[in-house]
Image 1: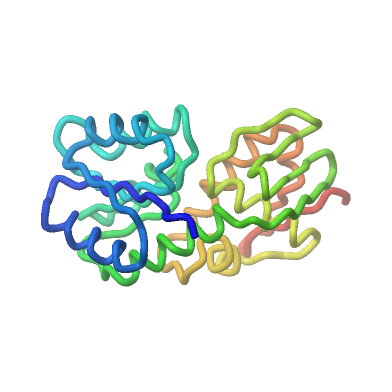
Image 2: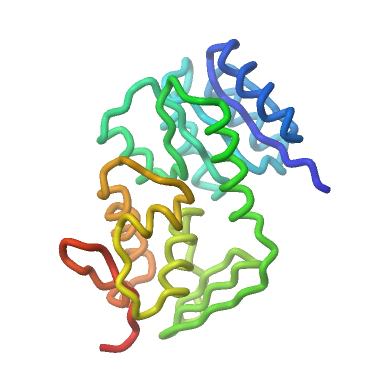
Length: 225
């Protein structure tokens, strides 16, 4: 089986070692760097990094800057680590395309579980292709087209659209969306979903109207009606 590379970026050597040890036991190949500039250099030098674990507060380039730089060229899954747990920080991270958000201190076992869940979903070999109202989503190619034009979605936006299309016509609560798309019980603010839906609607243009808001509950994907 392929050994997946995970890049751990944190200026605390103890934190890097903790994460590295837990991931190595699970069979991952772990690369580590201590600042944001090294992170960007390492990512583009390696080419085949499957996931990044990224601390927010770092010298030279902080986590936001690193995320912004990488997102210009890649939708590689990113887990952001932070010592702060302010809601606006989370929302900023999601707007930049962060896939998971974990506050320090955290359980290394939980972190590993999140890494495995993200990679399992992002690297799924399923050949499912779904089409509805001019939107075509190809899971194997991890590609979305709208009226035959390729649309660039982040990993989480892709997962969210796939979940909507798989559940056409069904009213989906925010809780259900979080549990299925984020793959764990999320106890943060429901605006996490609203942020992603807003960006998704914007990216798919007029087709964004297919994602209907059910006030006080959640959303429904419906092509007609």
